[in-house]
Length: 127
Image (tube, rainbow, N blue to C red; front, side, top):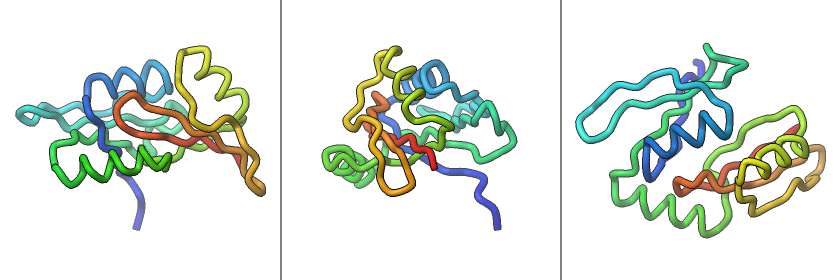
C-alpha cells in the first residue's frame, strides 16, 4: 500500500493553485476540468513522482463546517517537511504569508503554522 494522493479542501481552486505554486513552490501536476470544478493536483519540485496534493473544491456543506472549525482552532489541515523551518518562515514572510505560529521547538521538531489564503492553516516542520 502506498500514499499517492492527499487532499486539502480549498475555498477557491484558482487562488489555491496560485498560492501553492507561486508562494509555496509546488508544481502543478494535473488539471482536468470537471464541470464547475476541476481535478487539480500539485507536487513537490523535489519529488515530482511523489505524493500528489489534491486541491479539493469545497462544495460539500459538512466539509465547509469542518474546514472552518479546524481553522478557527488553529489546527493545520496538513504539514510539509522543510530542511530549515526558520529559513522557510523568513522566505514566506517576505512573500506576505501570514503566520499564526512562528518557528517553535517542540521536542525534536521545529514547526510553524500559516494561512494558505484558501481556508486552511498549514504547517511546515523540520526534524
